[in-house]
Image (cartoon, rainbow, N blue to C red; front, side, top):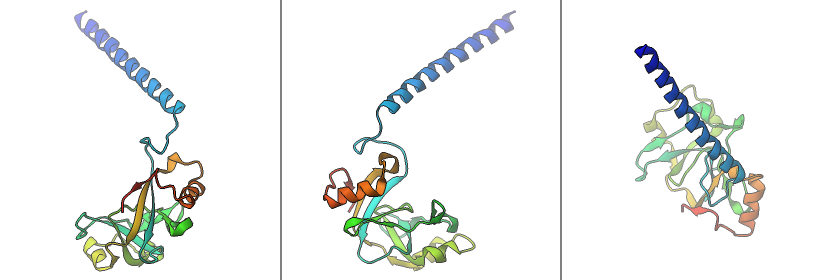
Length: 175
């Protein structure tokens, strides 16, 4: 009898915890659905970066360098240079800006390899080999973090409007 009572108590406790958790999740989901993300709020999703470079690097693959720009901390596999089934070239925007589709940051640099060349590699290259293929370790004249893709209904149109109005107040300047 004692064993059965212990099991019953464990079942009741587990059920109570589960109900509490479900209640919290429901309240959070209700709050999120009533309050869509805005530029000044944090929300999850792919980051949006717009940038200008010293030269036209739009055909070249970006990698991420360490803060001191002496080593590569992140680089794509050959199959990762695609976005929505196409090579992840940046999207041209107004004012000479580019919209990143690959995953750059202020510590990005560009290789001497095009997206096409890189995507045809049979395996991921060695980081030391990539360092030898670096075109520019400081390519940006301007770069802005603009929130996440989920914060926009029409990403390109909205970015072009903000750029055209020279309204960068909603963006975080990285350089």
